[in-house]
Length: 222
Picture 1: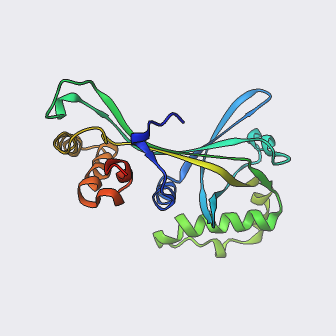
Picture 2: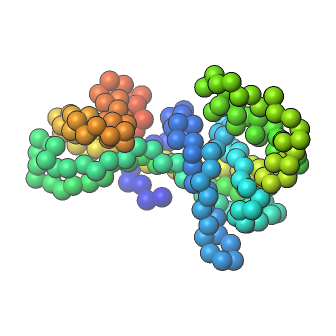
């Protein structure tokens, strides 16, 4: 991913936190018929002294899983954070041009297939525990009978993707003054949509957290 130095984020703590927050990612690989992309919920498992491992699952009817037979095909997982159009009208110094602020993380690795029913079931249980259990609703995975679970496992493959490297780009007006960023924050807050508010929150973190904020290491001139 093309990333000027001003927008590069390299701190594992910040990157892993963002990957979990933006965990509905896009998995891209290339086969004989060209590139294929699938949108998937990702479990992010940290590893000591190595980039994290991604764990997910997809429908067996999705032919992309065949790319990963043998575990040698490289793939790209794209985690998309907040993004927003930025107008020069919001800056104190308006002798410049529009741009787009955004945050994205790329994870590159070689996925391997997980096809044993018990291992697939473990991935599904982890997925439910992460996203459904905190909702506190009446549904429970444990209450589902095997007669419903086992046929579903036959229609799913799980994927284990140890990452070889991770690239994080947080383009957040690091090249602008505090006054210009304040104008951007005010305009994004006033815009009223979720993406604009999320971008405003990331920018506001610069002012309150400094170098500890996502992207803040570059802002502070590390």
